[in-house]
Length: 373
Image (cartoon, rainbow, N blue to C red; front, side):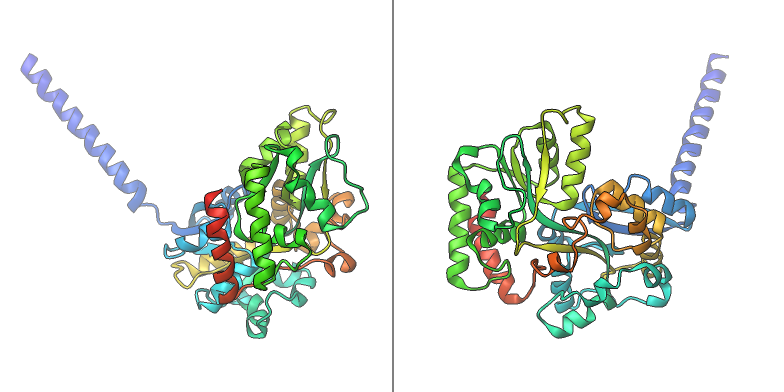
């Protein structure tokens, strides 16, 4: 009897093991959905966007991966991604290197209908061929401006100033040692230093670059800035930092977080935009290594559904290029020139340009400054 019970028990164990093995194999082999791999910035999409896409496009299973900035994304592009979302200057580089697929606009009806006409006339690159080809390979997802986020209770800046020296000077002021934030991002950090020194954020003048390099090196010693990107938002909201370089979208996220923490009475977080600073467009592209080109087009088109675009820009805080979504925003945001620049404000800003010369000179500075941050 005991022997018979043991044999029966083993049969049950074998049956259970076989069932689990079948279930495991079937969960992979029986899942007929096609994989769609998305590579995006961290904290750069609404929480339910991917889930909702999979519900409405049930033939796809999304694999979602993130990066912190363009420079950390770039060396990973030998992996296979179906949609990537770099900034416009990195798109220019990828176009120059022939690493992007051209888009089939017939498969992007939402983009045709809702893309703000502004983006057809933006100068994305000094290279005319790349500039003219930009929207054949990349679709604007969200955009922002770059300015100073600061606690007006602790930092005194005249509200109406647009003077880069006066605004960025906070980041290089010894009295705020250990209390300011800098992005661990090559173009943003060097761009801030160039703008502070009174030069174009696209300068390739060796003397100007050397001056910006020294400003950043001195800052490391004299101010000891906190470094990062996403981590700085929480530190600003908690009051650990009095000021930081920031994307306009981060200001909205930080302000919401301050309210969540019940600190609105003690922290007055503001955003100010210096003349000559950067405005940046993050763009959806399909790499030449993509395996699911059809799914990539469907995803990009889905992201331009007005309700989806609205949810993403509200969750992330960045500005939407979707005309229908913008109309649904709070007018205090939609009409704020720091978030949605008017023609006069745009005329005072620059996008980052890209070329082999830029990459070489800026990467040399970053090795001396950013790599040792």
